[in-house]
Length: 168
Image (cartoon, rainbow, N blue to C red; front, side, top):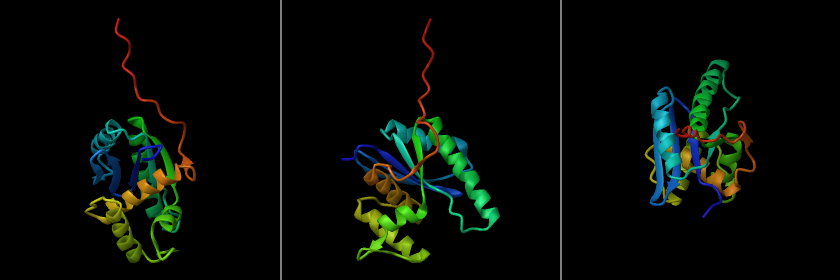
């Protein structure tokens, strides 16, 4: 279907994630403050064939305290993804939203309208998101897969999965 299998991630206190499996979309939300839970979710994604992550970047229109909190969460999420061998790229919210959340070819404006449109788009793609965090993650994953991750900023070199040492 696509050249890469992408997990979309919407980082927040309750971090939404979504990726395609052979059986359809896997959507969920996990606490960004529970490292073990993040690692478990991302390890499962890697085992399902996910190779790349498209993570929404922090948006700068917030007050400093909120921006710092989101940057902390983003760092935790990106670190957990890289720890399980998934390459991470950041996407600006405006980029994926203008591409994915359109009505009649025009990007949808306003937070509530965008959330409703995100849910509609995710369902049209065959996903069953329970929350707008999950529907955003579906849209982010689809955006990353359809753009080939070309318009995003890499967070560093592609990670390598840890190898067990050779047996003596």
